[in-house]
Amino acid sequence: RSGYRQLLENEAGFKVVAEAGDADSAYQTFRAESPDICIMDVMLPDASGIEALRRIIQYCPAAKVLMFTMYSRPAIARQALAGGAMGVLSKDSPPAEMLDAVDQWLTADLPQ
Image (cartoon, rainbow, N blue to C red; front, top):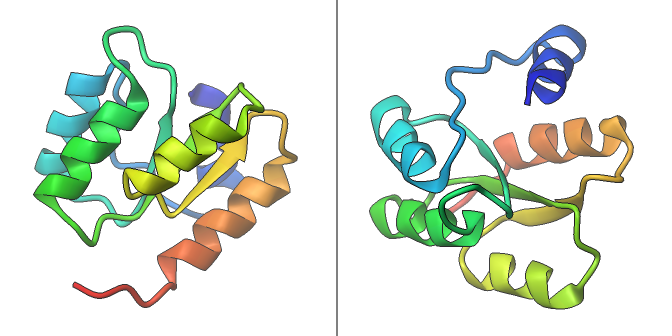
C-alpha cells in the first residue's frame, strides 16, 4: 500500500485520505471519508475485497472503485465488475496504467 500511496501522491498529485488493511475497515473507512475513488485489493485478510466492494456500492451506488488483483483469472474480473467496480487492474500492470485509470475514472460522469 505504501508504494501505491507514494505513487499517487508524488507522481500524480492526488491526496490519499485513508488506508485500510481489511474488508470491514475498508467499508467503514469509505463511509467515514467518502473518497472520490477507492482502490481496493481483491484479496484481503478477513474477507474478499469483492465483498467490501458490494457493501460500498450498496451504501453508495455512485462509488468509484478500482480493484487490484494478483490473479489473472477472468472470473475474478467478472465478479468485481458485476459487484460494481469501475475496473480491474492486475498488480503486474505498469504504474502508469493505474494512474491513467484513476485519472480517467475520477473524471467519469456517473449517474448519482
